[in-house]
Amino acid sequence: MRLSRIAGALALTTIATGLLAAGCGDGGAAPSGSPEDAKPGPRPERKLRVFHAAGLTALLDEVRADCRQELGIVLDTEGSGSQMACRKVTEMKRGCDLLMLADSFLVGELLGGTCSWRLDFATDEIVLAVGKRAPNTELAERDWPAALLADGVRFGRVDENLGPIGYRTLLALRLQEMSGSSGLYERALAKCARVVDDHGRLTPLLEAGELDYAFVYRSGCVSHGLRFIRLDDRVNLGSMTGDYSKASVTFEKLKAGEREKVTVRGGPVVWTLTIPDEGADAAGAREFVAWLLTAKTAALARNGLTPIRPALFYGPEERAAPFKDLARVAGWLK
Image 1 (tube, rainbow, N blue to C red):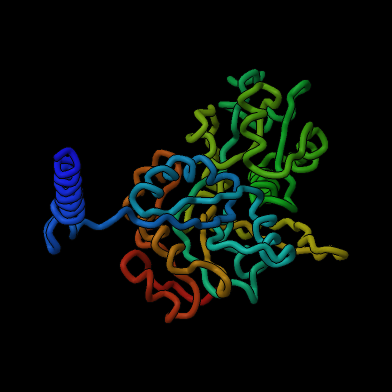
Image 2 (cartoon, rainbow, N blue to C red):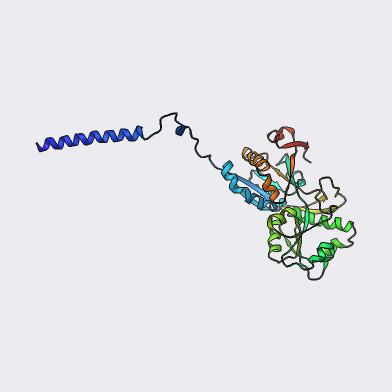
């Protein structure tokens, strides 16, 4: 009798276990074709490596989180002077998906054979940034050359061989000298207290009061909340229709084992971008660029950049097709 009750209990347990298993296998899952079954999963993330001019750091930092959330693109950014960004690709053979530079001239000059087009997307201007402890600020508002050359003033600049703001500093001094400030160019360079690698290293020195004055991009002052003095339109390289070509300077096109001189003439400050012809995630880069120049124009403005609308494409027409909704073909890459 006892054995019979045990056998019965075992049989009931077996049946219950089977029913539970059946319930877990079928009843807990949504029927095929239901709304739950149709929900897309999270978009897979992919990394986009960007070599960029240091002056764009604040902008890229601002859009980084939204880019990841909206596009599933994780920005892997590396800032430097624009010439150095080009060297990373051409000489150091480091791969990247997108280059964003402070001077459109450099794409044709330094990236030949690597990039066959460029997209000019924003303009800017040169200003005189004022450091936290700068003397002679009232004088600088009226006569900045006199304030810059005064005793005790610490003037800093970027190396012209490493970043466009470096040679544009020299161009601005040349243009101001041509406008009546005799001897300014040589005197300003002679009293320069600090030469740094890129734009991103100047702004902290001004903020900390370690430098008094430096020529930087207006966008850099806006994004860092730095006081600045506007230059005359004949000097600031800020007009797309202005002629600044009467001033020229040279910088060294640095390569391992050789130094080649490059002459650059004055021209408007134009921010540009390009994608290497080989080895880049071109589709990801184009998606990011389209998003940045359409959905994030307010971020560009907050960081002191003036978007070019439509953007200007230079290069083979067939390469322009992916940007047809945000750019017009303006010519060949020079």
